[in-house]
Amino acid sequence: MANPDIIIVDDDPMVGELSRDLLTDAGYSVVLVQESMEAIPAIKAQMPRLIVTDIMMPGITGMDICKAVKSDPALRHIKIIVVSGKSYEVEKQRAFQLGADFFLQKPYNVETFSNTVKSILDGAAPASQEQTAAAPAIIREEEQAQASDLGAGQIRVTVWGARGLPTQLPNSPSRYGRQTSCLSVETRDHLFVFDAGTGVVDLGREIIQRKRYYKDIWVCLTHFHLDHILGLGHFAPIYDPEFKIHLIGSNDPEKTLKEVAQASFYSSFAFAKQAPKAKIDIYEILEDNYELFPGIKLSAMYANHPTSTLVYVLDLFGKRITYAPDSEIWGDATAFQDYDEKFGGFVKGSDLFIHDCAYNDKDYETQKKQGHSGLSVVVDFAAEKAQARDLVLWHADPDYSDEQLDQMQAEANNRAQQKGFALSCHLPSEKQTFLMQGSR
Image 1 (cartoon, helix red, strand yellow):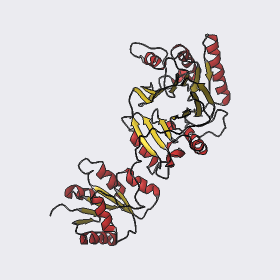
Image 2: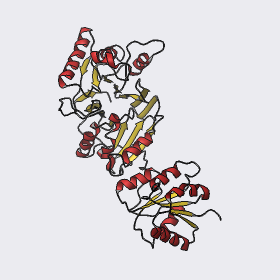
Image 3: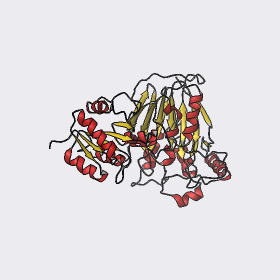
């Protein structure tokens, strides 16, 4: 027997046989598989053009079949229609994330079923409210809206979250806030967001409330640890079609930037319960310099931190902003460890130096070589290597009390004063802003 056009996988005899008869009457050669465990061997042996599979079956599910087919280079060209009585939006998102070409809700229309299948096989998906795009559209327009509260050359930096993620949710409030990493950098024309920890949720709400000054938003992820991406699925502009989101980051051997985006927006395990409506670009970058706009440059360097982690430097209007939320400065560089020297050259001349300072000096003694920095070494580096004017201490241990944080800030400024550094040290609270005036 020649290879069939279609394999139907459905454990319900009535539905499976009805589907087979409708498609046979339409002129297709069809095989019905009623035992889900036999589906993958049958697909490999018979190599159909299309698979129609139910989701809920004993043995393996239709989602398992979809994933197995689309992850196999020899099978991934086969088109798949997922059929289910589970009409939840999250199930549709999950099906498309796993590679489905179409989602058809039960009970389907028997009069249009064959035409739907024909459209999928012909490569033109039929117009249907049951279909959801597998990925957001890509757009590269440069048109920008203006934020009227900032003048030419003005830069506003806002902290939306700067704490580490605790192993247990704290019961006590904090004057410094509890949200995890997110920083925004605004000009009259542009908005840059660094990391999408839980702090990005409040930022997203404010962007919507501000009457959409920024139509293009650049979101730069340093890495994929949970405290830096936890809020991505709840960033409100992603669900508004008037926005364009440019997502920037480095791939990791375990996860690509695209996979992180898909998991944040489409996975059934994600917090998001709907698909994005904004237009989204994904830029997978390496250590390099990138001119985003005339006079605005974004530079990236790999940080001394577990996993593929980036440090960003944003140069704009003659000002330099460094964002290094997870970076361990050794303070004792040797021939075998030159991170401090390389990093110092990369961030030299920072006007605003935002750097990991998870620990006070006492605690850092027991936490060395784990990817986070201690107080004194960061203050010294900011003044001597980065030659910064302002130091923002980031990623404070979530277990520290406000009194401990107050003490850290006092010790940082005392050290700078005692050593004669022209450096102001800040341990930021949420929504704290730094206003800078650059040239234009």
